[in-house]
Length: 44
View 1 (tube, rainbow, N blue to C red):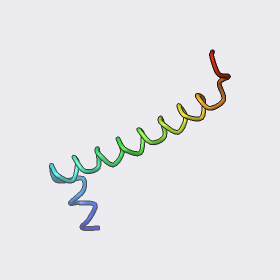
View 2: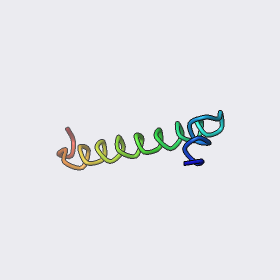
View 3: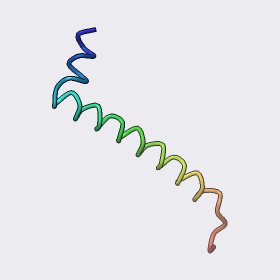
View 4: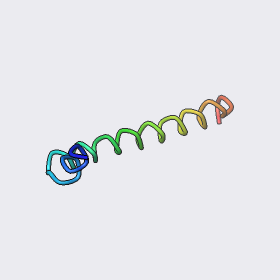
């Protein structure tokens, strides 16, 4: 449980948690965007 205290209780832990969540969110966004773009017809 020490790792949770480090992650949520320190500045560098919170920043790293934010970065990890941001990267996961960006990856989900890019997968959805590329999937939509690949279904579009050319020229539209």
